[in-house]
Length: 78
Ligand SMILES: [Zn+2]
Image 1 (cartoon, rainbow, N blue to C red):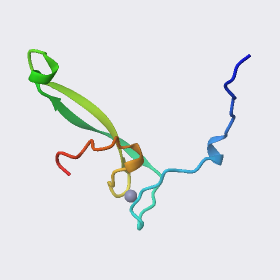
Image 2: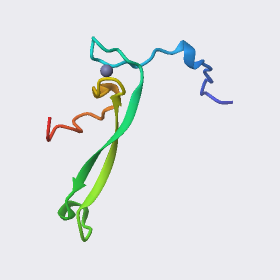
Image 3: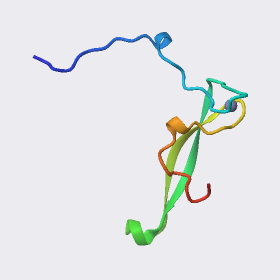
């Protein structure tokens, strides 16, 4: 017996994540990366490591989608 319940939902029944810019509200996003530098002193590697973090920006106005942005990921330059 399985306790997990299978839920079947068609994509058309789901709400879209839209651009938060109220003059835009575009539902299409482009995948971009922010490249985080991990200092060798932290990683223990012989050189700094670049760690890409995936983010989504509005295809129309370039606004970042906060629902797909890990908390504080841009804090250093925002
Ligand atoms: Zn937008």
